[in-house]
Image 1: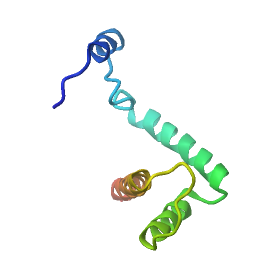
Image 2: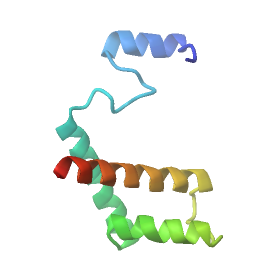
Image 3: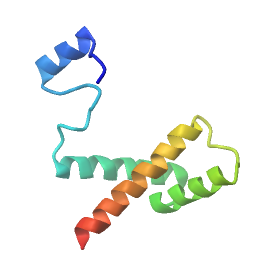
Length: 95
């Protein structure tokens, strides 16, 4: 585990949360609300549903097509993995 900076240690002490993990203090409900808000913003900007957007990104990435402006291959792979992880977790717990 990497050592935290003096500033990070002070923030943890003052705020009771680790700045490297900004969402770990949220409850499940707060995290769901945050994820839903982000999905709404992405859907509004992309003009498609999040699931469709993620699948289109996966297809474009594997086909070597140009990436959206401002996004790296690693960011897109992370987005795809995160979405699929959240979707599979929700499906698992919904059963």
